[in-house]
Length: 114
Image 1 (cartoon, helix red, strand yellow):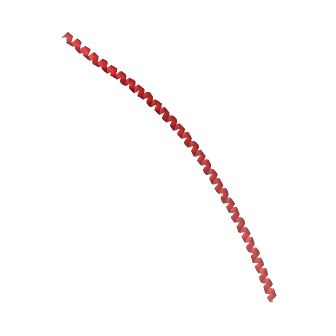
Image 2 (cartoon, one colour):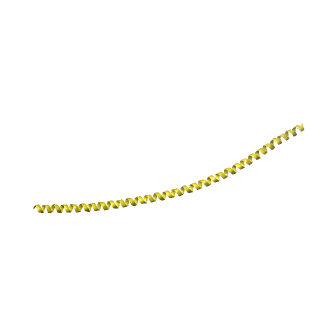
Image 3 (cartoon, rainbow, N blue to C red):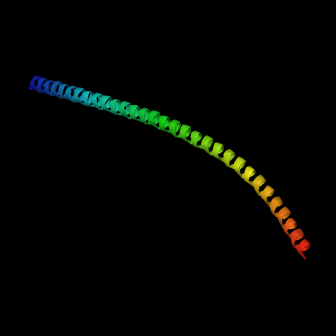
């Protein structure tokens, strides 16, 4: 009876050990698959992030070039306007001098009529 009990207990122990090893193998396999899936997701996220970074960098470089072009155009316009204002100011000064001269001339003519 002792030998039967011992044999039965050893058999139960062997079955329990085998069951535990199978469960361990399944758990290990599941965890390895989850790890692989996680690594894949991380890689995809990294690639997406890098692509977005490259796209953003390219867009910002393009916007910067556009802004530089606008600033250059604005500078040219400003210089052109400044030159025109200077020319108009000179012409206005000349016209003012002519008006003063004509007023003086008119006053002299009126004085000579009297």
